[in-house]
Image (tube, rainbow over all chains, first blue to last red; front, side, top):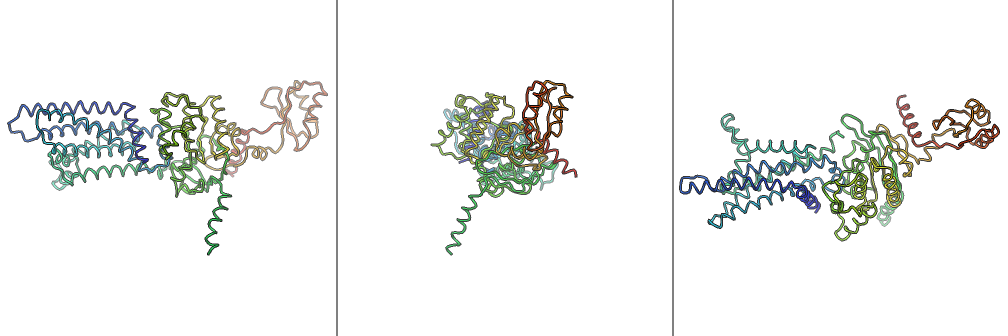
Length: 246
Length: 334
C-alpha cells in the first residue's frame, strides 16, 4: 500500500515536471526512425539473402535508445530527494526502506512500460498491410522490458549514491554501456574469461530474446541483475545508519 | 496464579501513570570527524513544550534525528510513548510529527496534494483524509493557498506547510527543528502562537538558538553545548539559580560620581556599575531580601535628581545561557 503511494507520487512528479513527456518523445522519435529505416531496408532487399528479421534488427537498435534515455528517468529518483532534503521526511515517516525503493522502481518501470506500449503503434501500422507473426514480436518486447527493468534498478542504485543528478545519470550510462560491451573482448581475454563475460553482459541475453527465443536462463539473468541493484540500493540507503557522516 | 496474571497489567498501569512521553537515556552519537552528542539524558512529560537550546553545531539536530529514527545512536537509547527507538522505529515514527530544520518540501506539488501524499503515507483512511487535511490547512492558515504549488510560496508559507505536514496525523509528539528560522517578525509571532496552542494536547520538542523564543514558548529548557547537557530546568528556575545577587537598574539625570557615592552609601547596596542601557544607566547589585529599591528612590528624590527609570532586573535567558556555557567550559578545562 505504501509502496503504491510512493509510486503514485513519483509518477505524478514525472508528468508534472515534463521529464516523462520529453524522454518519451525522444524515445519514440528515435525508435520510430530506426523502425522506419529498417523497414525500408527490408522492403528494398526483399527476396535477397537477409539473415536477420525486421524485429531483430529494429530491437537491436531500440535497445541503444533505451540504454541512453533510461538514466535520465532514474537520475532524479534519490539524488533529488537527497539534495532537497525530502529524503529525511520519508526516512522519518512510518515507511520501510524497501517500500521507498520499490515505489520509485515501480513508478519508473511504469513510465518505461508506457513508452514501450506507445511503440506498439509501429507494428500495428505494419499489420494493416502485412500479416506479421505476433509471437516473436512479443519475445522482443519481453526482452526489452526485462532489460529496461535491470537498467532502471542500476540507475536507482547510482542515484542513491549521490546528490547530483548529472553524476547519477552519467555514471548510469557508463555502467550500462559497459554491461553491454562487456563481452567484446575476444582478442584480449582468454576464452574461459570471455565465457564468463558473455554470461555477465547484457547483450548476449538480449540477443536471444530478439531472435524470438524465450529462455528461462535469460529471464532469470535480468531479474537477478535487477534484484542485485535494488539490494545494493537498500544497502546504500541503510548506510546512513552506520556511516559517521552528518 | 491469579496474582501473577494480574501483576503485569497492574505494573503496566502504574508504569503508564508515571511514564514520560519522551525518555532519553544516555544517548550518544559519534561522527567520524567530530562528536555529535555525548551521553544525553532527559525526560519530557506529556503536554510539555521543551526548548532545546544550544549554539550552532551543538548537537540539536543530531539529537532530533536520533529521536525521529533517521539514524540510530552510537550508544544509549530513547523511548517515545514507551516505544524504543532502536527496537520499534516504525512505531516511534507513527507517534511522531517532525519538521526538519531545512523544511524539505516537494516544490513541484500543490499544498493539498503534498498533504494528501503524507496522509496516505501515514495511513489515514480515505474517509478521514479529506477532513484531516482541511483541519490542518485551517489550523495553519493555509486554506487560501491550498491549490498553489509549494515552489511558488513564500518562506513563511512553506514553513507552515512543513508544520501542517507534521500535524497531519495528530501525533502525540511533535519535534520541530528551528521552526521560526528565516521568518519575518510577524510570521515568527504567528508560528509561536500556533506552537503554544499545540502544546496543551501534545508533547513538543522545539530547538532554537534564539533564546527569547525559547523563553516565550517553552515550559522547560535543555541547554546543550558541544553535544553535552549543560542544564535542564524551567526558564524561571534557571534565572533564580544563577542570579545570586539581585540587581536594580537606575537611570537618573545626575553627575555620575555623586550618584554612585549616594547609592553606595545606602545600606544593602553591594556595588554600582555602569549599565549598557545608556550613559545615565547604572546597575546596582544589592543584598538578597533588602528593601533597597525604596530607599534608593527616596535618596535620589532627596537630592532633587530626576529619576527616569528604576526597576529590578531579571537575568535574561541570553545572560543565563552565556553564564552556563562559560561555567561548563571552565569546569571541563579543570
